[in-house]
Length: 98
Image (tube, rainbow, N blue to C red; front, side, top):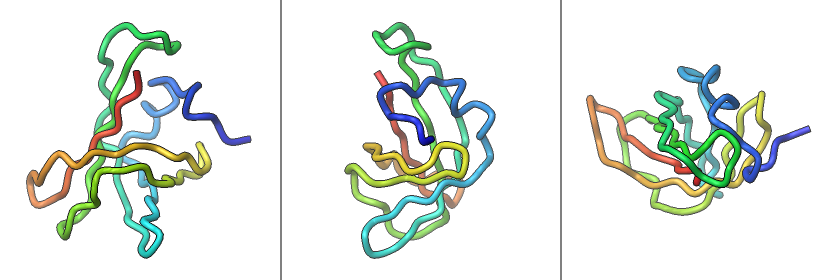
């Protein structure tokens, strides 16, 4: 059964670093690679606050917003993603859980 965004913890993502996720814009699918899971400190959420950094190939940025993001281990999750800018020829994005 897929997890809920409200119950996700860093340990759900840490073994998935380097793996691909699929973000659906409603028109296109964008392949994202999870690059980093960062612990951000205390929060009401079990495991504390954390962020995920994703990268995609060069091209236009996905606008900031909530999108369905799919991974075989986690299922389909609606998550709010923020573009960070280009780095090393890739587009960077972040999702923060507090």
